[in-house]
Image 1: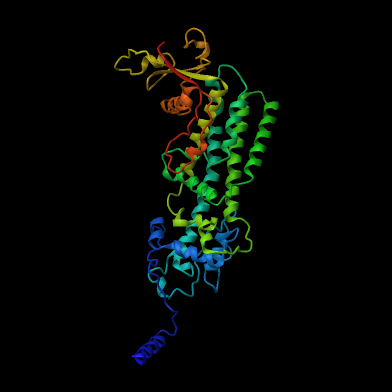
Image 2 (image 1 turned 180 degrees about the horizontal axis):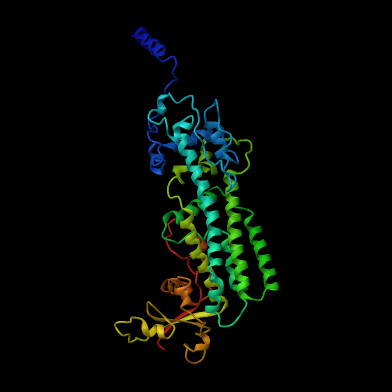
Length: 440
């Protein structure tokens, strides 16, 4: 029997002398077309094992994605130009490679796919995940400038300040309180597009798990604070202050995105070997690709820009309302609207129909003597909140009501808003003006 087995091996070896040893895993990659590079297939083909094994054997580096590509493109012609370290990079891609192993059975059916560019087909999923991570960050980087430009070009700030403020006042305090938080990751979140809501949350989870938060953030915030102090001294017009603040929001957000990019795709240094296998799962290299985390839900630049513009406009409006000392009285008096014009009576008094009654936005209206709807306590055009800013006033008032019972001045909860399971459109206390309900 042993001789027959030996004979079979000899015959097999002779018939496949020009072929490589074919070892197929229990979960081989069987699909790698443009629509196949998904999180579901990553898990189906157990790509985590491939990534885990590589890190355990070869370690990580500051530019792990480039290191991974160099090691896993064909050894006769490794691709050394993979570069995602800059948002202007044109080499965050892997062109078609001449793979000498393409005849190996592991590539059967995958010959003309992205995965055929690598030593192992599973490597294609890992590299595509990192390409998506770069593209998503780039889309955020470009979109925040698009959003800032759109607000500037629409003359939004001048229009809103004129509408909400009947007289010039300094708005430095209101804007200052929010600007420090805006250099974090808040502005893409809160819209209808799932990808826009989850991408930065995934980034934050990795940063938190690896305890690698961006140490330069504090310096960035200090820099912005100093800029604000200089603005306060030099500029008295509130619109000019807000425009400079908006510019700081854009550049501050882009600076943070660049530092995130540097963490993942920074300068290539010598690999850092892993001392024990149990440490692999805690590395940034592993967590940034674990389960193909960035293969699905890629946020587009246009979707992000639209949501960022909405959130930036929310911040501007919230800042102006706070600086102008606005509050809201919800008149609970039953109003006799004609059937053809629901909400007409409330609107005639410069109010908004909300849950519980007619919301009257006034400047220090709650503490004023006499009628709370006194014209001198109103902005020039309170309806610009809807007509220009596009704000959901019912949502705005509900947000303020829920903030410390409508007492005003509550701290905006950015951390809770950034939790992965949170699907709210606004952070708690985004609008923190006072709200009271009473019959007038």
